[in-house]
Image (tube, rainbow, N blue to C red; front, top):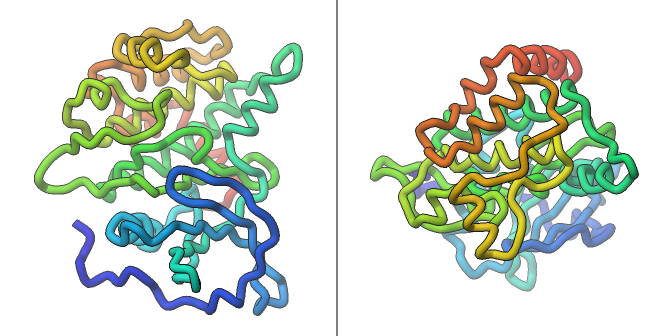
Amino acid sequence: MIPSNIPLMVPSMAPSNYKEIKFLSRGAHGSCYLCERTDDVLQTKVVIKKIPLVDPEKQKEEINILSRFRHPFIVGFFETFVDSIGNMNIVMQYMEGGNLADFLHERSLPVPKAYLNDDQVADYLGQITMALEYLHRNNIIHRDLKPDNILMNASKKVLKVADFGISKEMEDSGPSKTFIGTSNYVAPEMYMGRSYDKTVDIWALGCVLYELTELERAFTGCHAALVNNILKASYSKPKRCSNPILLQIMLDCLSVTPERRPRARDILASPVVLLAIGRICAMCEV
């Protein structure tokens, strides 16, 4: 559990130390703005997520997750403050390359599509999985892993998992039953109203891996058809993945039975991902 003595706000600079540059995005849990530090000679760019302060405990959980954990493939956290109109402001690292969803969409537009090669897919999979393994080892379920919540650096080679607005710390009392997440990436057990654990993140990882290889979502359609396809793990056979190990990882992650899904550390131990980790570490010096 999150210790009760952790404050809602951490010591912060005054809001006047940030200059808003432009609006970036709006989601269910707040709006994000690109800003720069006015008290910094380098005028460092940051992202400020503004959240109406209506549920302090929920916002406290996101802040505590971001502030407690440091990882090369999780978006960096700097500070928080409450502004004059009562919004909680979370100051985070700015990733110049945008998000993975937009990147994949752009690659899906040309004819023929600009598919990623297997090494690129493995490099991205390795980074996302290292972030998940770190979260799971620290008893955190992300619960909303999707390309929109995976950010990229300017070179599009480094990924960082973001948006912990609905993440949950696993409790000693057992798995959760709260239905939450984005429809196309929600695991079958959540739709069935069953208890779930960190394996829901592995299902979502399988969905992301499918998109990395196919440049389209594994599960689509109207709500009823979407849910039916997810409950049956019914999706078009992937055609673009030529590496049998990557393909098997995808199939295993998208198992309807949670117990059959691999753990994050199992994925990291696979030969193709181990090779990717070597490339990633050389690139990022981590």
